[in-house]
Image (cartoon, rainbow, N blue to C red; front, side):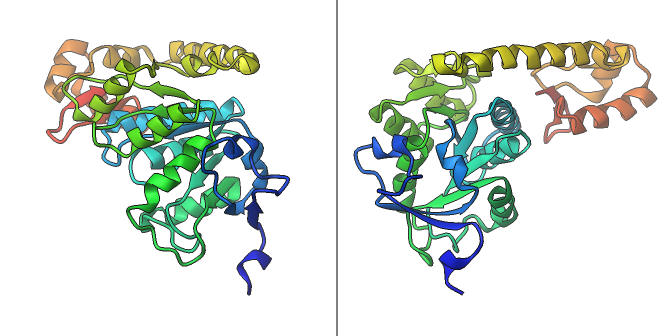
Length: 299
C-alpha cells in the first residue's frame, strides 16, 4: 500500500492550505512535510519544550508538568521525540487536553530512538508526527539541527528545561531567537552541569521561567490562559490543603537536599511503620524522589 493512501498519513507542501504560516516565516522553510496523526495540530498555538537527553529526575518532572499545563490550557507542545526532556514533554502533553507535535530527525518509518516507538504511536492518536525527510531516511546526526529549526519554526516560543553548554537544545533556542521567537529557560543549581546552558541563555536575554504564567504573559492574545492557569493553581492549592496532616508533616521534613529514612522519622515524629507506608505513596504521586544512595529529596 502506498504510504499516503493510509489513514491519517499526509504530505503538506508549501502551497498547501494547512502548511503553517508561522513555519513559512523562517529563512529556510521545508518545501514539504510528511505527517501522521491529526493535521489540525499544525494550526494550533505551539510552545516548544526541549532539553537534555540525560536530565535529572527533577528536570524530567518539570518538563512533564509544564507540558501538561500548557496542553491543558489549549497550547500544543512541540518537541523532538529524543531521550530525556523531549520524551517527558511529549508524555506530559499527552496527559493534557491538547496533545503534542513530534518533529523527527529521519523518515516517518525510521522512528528514533526505538524505545519511543510506543510513544510515537500514542502521539499519532493524540497529536502529530512530522518530518521533512522522505521515507527510509535514517536519523543521521546532521539531520537533527535541521529538525531543530522546524521545532522552533512551528512554535511561538521555546522553553529549555535543562541543557549543558554543548546541548543541541541550545541550537533550537538560538534558532528560535534568530526566527524572532521567544526563548524561555528554567534556572537550576549552579552545581548541576545540566543547568549551565539554561543560565547562559538567561544571561543572553532568555526569560527566566519558573511557572507557566511566565510563558503565557508574553503573548497578550492568550490572556484568557492566565485566568485558567490561576484557577488551576487555586484548585491545586485547595487539594493540597486536604492532604492528610501526616503527609504534609512528612513533606515538610523532606527538602531539596537528600535526607535519610531515619532522619525523616526522627524529625517528623511519625512512626517508622507509617513512614514506610507513606514514602512509596509520595514517590508514586511524584512528590519525592529516591536517590541512588537510598535517600529522599523533594521534587
